[in-house]
Amino acid sequence: MTRLQANLCLLLAGAIWGAGFVAQSTAMGSLGPFWFIGLRFLLASLVAAPLALWEARRPDAQPVPRGTLLGFLAIGMALFLAAAAQQIGLLTTSVTNSGFLTSLYVVFTPLLSVIVLRRRPHALVWPAAALALFGIFLLSGGSFSALGTGDAWTILCALLWAVQVVLVGIFAGQSGRPMALSLVQFLVCAAGGLAVAAVSEPISAEAVSGALVEILYAGLFSSGVAFILQVVGQRFTTAPQAAIFLSSEALFAALFGALLLSEAIPPIGYLGCAAIFAAILLAELGPTWRRASPSRDRQISGR
Image (cartoon, rainbow, N blue to C red; front, side, top):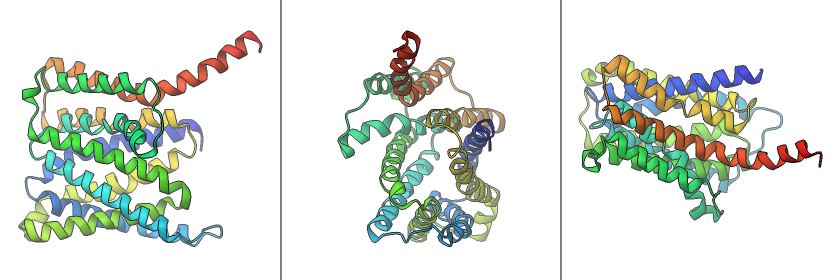
């Protein structure tokens, strides 16, 4: 696979996730958030199971140590809590807001790494965080009072996604079993969603039927196909390029929200969207550019 093909895989994954915000939002008209999460990740587990089995049967596959398996479970719990916060947020916020605010995990991740891993952040992390907060302010219409409860849940979702990303960084490399990790976290999400839904939300055949298209899309494509595209694509491209294409999910969320749900944001909100997206790129690409500069300078000077 060429780098161009890999980047197109990542762009397609971003598009699938962006459209997934629409599916998650419209499903709430028929089904409670936790039933949706449980059914969605149950389907995703069915997608990941044969891949995890194939991975386990590879000649070079190693057993997953108990400590790593516990890490997989922790990743699944972080994913479940993030999905729950996002789904609850979509009850009262727009697809556009949800798409951009969820993308704040790219900024939260290095900040969380300072606390958890005790790693000093790159100098560009702080202006990226400030730029992201300014973007949220503009996206709300230039007034923090305009930020609703759903937006707060979505920001919490972004923080929980950051927790999940940090945990994946710790445990995924130890095991070399990305499909097993995916299956475990999907099963945890399915079990958590169905358990909470069974005691807190009504259910009926009509409700499931009314959200069936959204469940199928979110389960098979947003959670299943998009994850596979991400794993495949990132094997053949650089991390900075992968970040650019995957973070496009926020832009696709706004696009699909406008096309399919006729959503609109205030004019100043477009500047906020641009500021948040610029913060994402600064947090991901800025350190790479800064590290690359001395190398280029040495090549030019002949040293």
